[in-house]
Image 1 (cartoon, rainbow, N blue to C red):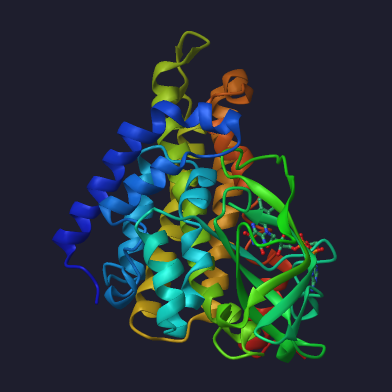
Image 2: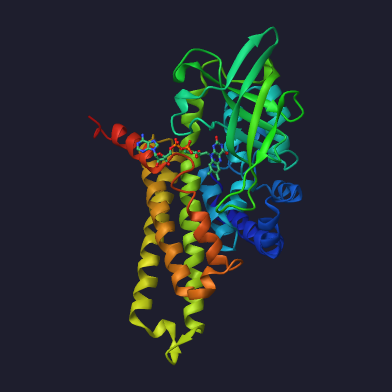
Amino acid sequence: MSATSTERQAMAAAAAELVRREVVPHLQEWEDAGEIPRSLHATAGALGLLGLAFPEEVGGAGGDLLDSVAVQEAMFGAGASSGLMAGLFTSGIALPHIAASGDVHLVDRFVRPTLAGEKIGALAITEPGGGSDVARITTRAELDGEHYVVNGTKTYITSGVRADFVTVAVRTGGPGHGGISLLVVEKGTPGFGVDRTLRKMGWHCSDTAELSFVDARVPVAHLVGAEGSGFGQIADQFVVERIALAVHGYGIAARSLDLAAAYVRERRAFGRPLIENQTVQHTLVEMRRQVEVARTYTREVAARHAAGDFVVAEACLAKQTAVDCAAHVCDRAVQLFGGAGYMHGTEVERHYRDARILPIGGGADEVLRDLTAMLMGYAS
Ligand SMILES: Cc1cc2nc3c(=O)[nH]c(=O)nc-3n(C[C@H](O)[C@H](O)[C@H](O)COP(=O)(O)OP(=O)(O)OC[C@H]3O[C@@H](n4cnc5c(N)ncnc54)[C@H](O)[C@@H]3O)c2cc1C
């Protein structure tokens, strides 16, 4: 059930305060280190932020998507980066399938401690051979008594370096989407490990891993849901991931707009503040227009999802709108900052780089357009 608006505002205010007090002063240090500390998960868990939209039966707060959207907006507004949010909230993509499975053993072992900030989880679908076409994954899990024997490689896995466990898409059956299952693989499992820590254009404080599985024996009890149901489980949870990425888009755009609007009031060129140029005012208005549209539409889609509507296509449209907004607004913010906007360590420079992952992760633009065309009856 959704929180009351007062509860939601209080939670958003607490989350913003956490960012101002415990994130902003250290963010550049974490960007340079390539990861965020575990202690931040514990703090966020204790505040109830990680479990906000998870049911109480699995250790969450019983809120809904609107609650997490409000909290995430507040965190971006206070200066959280997209990479920080990806690293801190990886639980949002690693756990939902396990929580929905209703498997008490898996919930107790993985969901509760992760929502409490005691464990870190990751979701591994993408492979070196491809990420868009999930139905063709090749990582294989062969049944052998009470275990699956897993072989394969996963790449670009968010929080994969730090993760205590990974929800992995594996092929347990034949070709196509019907042969895919989800298995939870724990750190320390012989044959499973981090092959490489990957360096990136943006999201620097979000650790990203290439993972390998060589005859890794995983208990059958770690199967999430029924064998062969993995693709459906992944597709179900993609809606929430895409709405979350839309919030990343307009979240960093709104923050970049605020920073740019403040800067052009102070910065002078040709003997007057930059903001006195009409073209600068128009630039800010266009940035604002795109943020308002992306935010309003995404909130609407989130509300419809929370009400139980089928919004797979609309979630794609929201992500597309917010991603385009981020690309434009973050670029214009760098422009308004001039040379300072190109400097390492300037906040708008970070948002500009971070924005570039958004049209790729959680489904590339082209793939989401294909899906939307199909769902809206435009595909031949
Ligand atoms: C920083 C980062 C974090 C990530 N985190 C995770 C994670 O935690 N877990 C995980 O499993 N994956 C993760 N990914 C992987 C991400 O989901 C994939 O990169 C994405 O799905 C695209 O897959 P790909 O990179 O293999 O690109 P490909 O599938 O090779 O596609 C390459 C490009 O081709 C184009 N394209 C693809 N299909 C079509 C089509 N049908 N029509 C037209 N054009 C098309 C698109 O422009 C696409 O960007 C992450 C990636 C990055 C960069």
